[in-house]
Image (tube, rainbow, N blue to C red):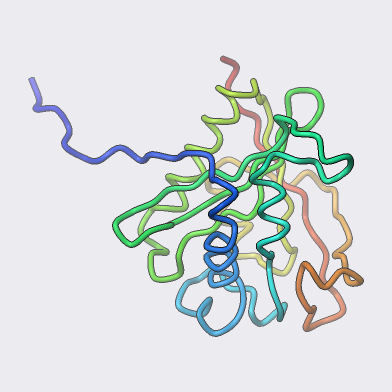
Length: 193
């Protein structure tokens, strides 16, 4: 008989609106600028500017759609904290027909390549299945991010064959450094409950 595991449980929770500024700082530090180069998820060579902003995150954290400012249970930012504060986060949005969109998977740059992203991804999938009855997760990844696409493929995601344009005319998503950016759509079926 083996001894019980003493490994800490990976705990996630929905983020709070008052965390919007700190979450924006975390996300931008992992994807853009010099700080992002401390980790492997940087997009700094593809995009400048911001990845997100506190206002957009605050709206998500309040659970609003942005259309009529009515609270709805359609999106959440899940967070994990450690002794240093916000360690990682991920955005989930409900889709029709028991689907969910997963985006903005973020791990503090100095904490990358230690299994936090893998743990967060698995926890987010479990949360979506349990809370929303999600049967399929979809995401978009910049096609030029081949190493990131391969990382998701190792976790069961597959390319659907669908591509989506990059929003070149919306600076809220960054300042493109090249003219050929677009997104690959990836999906993963979740086990039935």
